[in-house]
Image 1 (cartoon, helix red, strand yellow):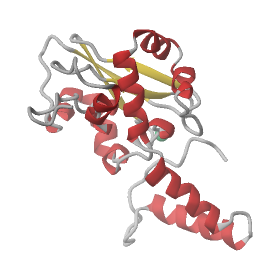
Image 2: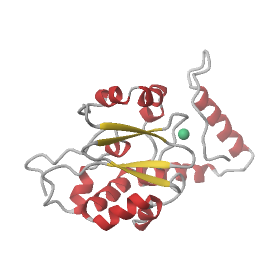
Image 3: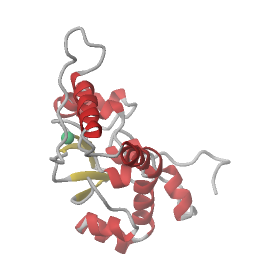
Image 4: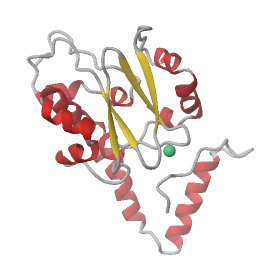
Length: 212
Ligand code: FE
């Protein structure tokens, strides 16, 4: 089966479910019925990506890059290998590219065709990432999308939009916030959100009083 999953289509007329959902359900029923997949194995696979693998993995990658310049250099040079150093690897993460945000460059990740996403470091994509409006508008009007996400970037910051494919998956390395010099790597990882690693947010410093 191709790694590049089905593209979204508009819901079938009169149907309460989008066409993609219907097709997936029909396919799953057929595979189980023919004995080609074990429903328990399927459930375990989904559970893994919903509850065990998630953005905390990516956050640890980001925090490591913030505290360890040599690791950051390896991450930008060969992201798949550097991410595997921390034990994160697997499907949809074989060919990773890490994009570094700087004071002058902000990176934003989208999959214009469907929902390609770096599973080993971010888990499963959020619903909005798979939505048609995000997929088209992230390219046509990235600043507008960011503004709606609450992120107003100065005009002198260049916005670069990266279109994921079945081959390459992107992870944004957000900027380390100010006033975090004293924080441990683990405390830094706690600050890193999923959205900041997709590029629709920045990482905000800890509020006073909650610093560790
Ligand atoms: Fe896709």
